[in-house]
Amino acid sequence: MKHTELITNEDGSIFHLHLLPEEIADNIIIVGDPGRVEMIGEMLDNIRVRKSNREFHTITGSYDGKEVTVISSGIGTDNIDIVINELDALANIDLTTGEEREEPKSLTFIRIGTSGALQPEMPVGSVAVTSKAIGFDGLIHFYEGYEWFIDHGFADALAEHLEWPDTLSYPYVVDADPSLMELFPASEFLRGHTISAPGFYGPQGRRLRIGLFDSEINDRITSFNYRGLKVTNYEMESSAIYGLARLLNHKAITLCIIIGNRVTGQFLNDYKPAVKDLVRKVLDRL
Image (cartoon, rainbow, N blue to C red; front, side):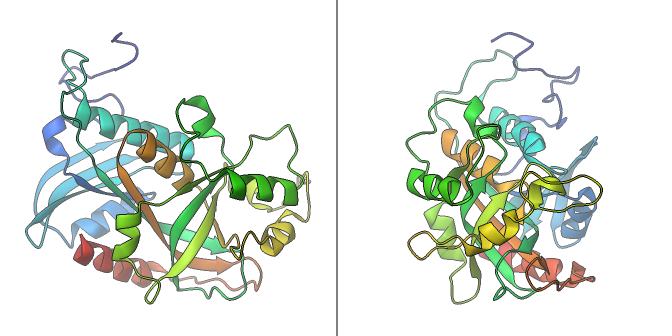
């Protein structure tokens, strides 16, 4: 493998994350905000790794005797492309030789974040577990081998409903890992069919000073129904996490606090307590 493909630093760590293979656990919590890493760190015991580079802050410690790594990705699927690929390389590639390991390791990725609801019945403060991640970002199209796990029926129906223009990347839909979904039952958590948008403003139907290609796109999304399934919320990372995890044989799931409802206009200003409560629930289920 060329040095320009798998880049390491002088200390042998992976290029962006600045981590060594022995510094990550098999269970990895991904958050967007670097400050949230330290908040979760306060719940862990015996923190043995603390690394930071750019927006990528990482700690590895234990919770109730089980190791967990917490890492911040920053915002967007472009950052997720870095995080998932480099974590996979740490687990499955010899960084000194560039050779893949004979026995691949499967990691578990749990994204904890915030989200905006697109259905009126999703109250602020509730938790949506993303059972389907809907990619408006286009990242997965740069890789091969994804066609077999994409929900083509859902994606095609949504594209038709939205009159999707050829100038945008075609939507793709990936399911969460079934075994992880069982840990967060529908009796306790809302089920989400979640759009991962490639931006916060125009790509999520927000208009400040620039007009949108479709000023009614959020109304169109809210009215969509595919075999009884609706699009429920926006965020900006899950499609890439789900898609890359499936391609690399890892498990992935996203849980988001609904902090705003785009239909009702409600917004939860102080959502930190809800995030802390969600983190505790996730840690208890690992």
